[in-house]
Amino acid sequence: MRITDINQRERFLANGNVYLPHIVKIEKVVDETYDTRTFHFNFKDEKLKKEFTFQSGQFALCSIFGAGEAPFAISSSPTRRGHLECTVRQVGKLTNALHRLGIGAEIGFRGPYGNGFPMGFLQGKNLAFVAGGIGLSPLRSLIWNVIDNRDNYEKIDIIYGARSPADLCFKYDLDTWSKDKGINMVTTVDKGDESWTGRVGFVPQVLEQVAPSPSNAVAIVCGPPIMIRFTFPVLEKLGFPPEQMITTLEKRMKCGIGKCGRCNIGNIYVCRDGPVFTYAQIKSLVSSEY
Amino acid sequence: MINNKKINKRDIGNLLNEWSQEFTVFVPLRESGVAMLSKWDGKDTGFMDWHRNTVQPIKANFFPPMEEMFSFQKGKEGYHIELPSSDEHKQLIFGIRPCDARALIILDMTFKDLYEDPYYLPKRNNMVLIGLGCTNPYDSCFCTSLGINPGESADVDLMLTDMGDQFLIEEITEVGKELIAKASRVEEATEADEAEAREVKEASYNKVTRKIDTEGIKEKLLSCFEDQDFWEKVSTKCISCGICTFLCPTCYCFDINDELVRRQGTRFRSWDSCAFPVYTKMPMENPRLEKWRRVRQKVCHKFEFYPMNFDIIACVGCGRCIRQCLVNWDITQTLNSLPTRV
Image 1: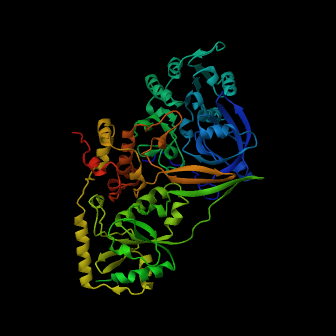
Image 2: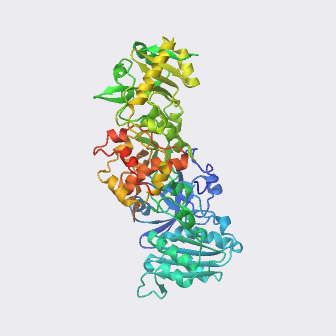
Image 3: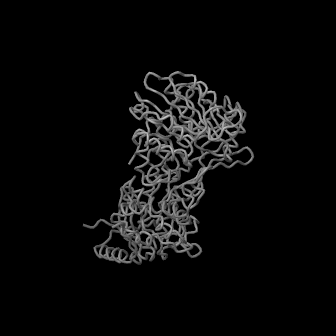
């Protein structure tokens, strides 16, 4: 079983060696929350700067030389050329090292890897985006992609939640999207604070209240595993068939190309066969270790 | 029609010396009481009387336990990345067993899949394999259950059968034929030699008495995949040391890390193991934190997932994981006790 195939995979190899990173330079650092930052960067190589392309939902292996390498979703949209963005939460040795870097610093970049969102399948559909916390980052790439090709899609719902107002990422985007008349933007937090006047409630519950119609619709879900696990049943209750529910999975990865072994779920490798799966595909997997 | 060759054992040293002109020759030398694959020193042929497979599998010659991928250095113009100088030396592995030769075919599948691995494949494509049939398999060996004949192999360039004072030589590939055409002191095998070799092979086949039933094993594992009680039971004594994976000729999982000494950095890959909890550890969770899940992964990867992806079981029955296990965990016991759903 091969869930997906990767196109154009040889195109952006450094020196023909799949493990060699390209050097990219950080151009801008945006504080998203107290522990999350978005890094804007670009290739040093002029040719790559012009030619590099990817699909929303694909990821890259970023190197902080001396600290190592880790996979990050590309959070910018392929429709907005000029630079790339990755949004990184400070959770360990490598991400701590990355957070210490500022404008002008050089990091390694190899990719893009993974399958990306099925753009052809999404065309002409109503889209319901359901995201939690930093899980918005791969969806943000898709959301901007969809907005930049607005005529290709029907109704857009975005349901986004975080633990607290301080944990909301991409506030500047949330602001833009909520002002967009073509988007139904719903933001929620698990627990508010004194200044929070918005919605309070867990993402799956809010999703149930917003109740996007399953007709000609696709739900795209990304967030912490616990949120994903509670969101699928709600979508099923709303009438979404598993083929119309899409998510992107996260696993520890090292190689990014299905060789180092650790990101498997049964016989599939999240890095190579995913990270984007339909719920129907997930249900057909040998293992429930997702 | 006979076209096999033979060579007297006392001429093997000479033959290896001839080959050393062209290749870096590795032989299974006897070190501290065990067979280890080592560089041929030009003299010692003691291994000729040492009939047993090496403790370490051959994979380390193509996929070292630790291998530099590139080095990096920060200069005025930013980071500079440099590939290690490639070792162009052609390797000749003398005395590889049929199980270990098959294991390389299995490893190739992963390293060729999707993206060709730029470290493994050049080394793998730059070597010659001289197979040696087993005459004295361990009681932990179970290669015959995996379609391997301990006396024969088509996965090598030349295949040798130990007939006491001499080796029968079968030329398997064109490369092997050329090697023999250039070799001195190689004779034509007689019909009597052929008959003797057949007997040796048959005897060796019959010495492998440990069996597993591979018939429908993929389906059996699939049906008991969620049987937590079973997996907890079979993993009880495992101490998650990883030795079964490090010594397994078909295990290939690796880690990638950086080392920084002053301003000179190295990115290297090293063998990793699904036996370790950290192997799958993420900042917030770990899908295989429990030991039974890791043991299940090891068994199912070899007998269920690999067959699903490559149509071949990723086990060659070399028995190392049984012989070297500190707590006598036995994969054949696990496989032979799979609960069958009625």
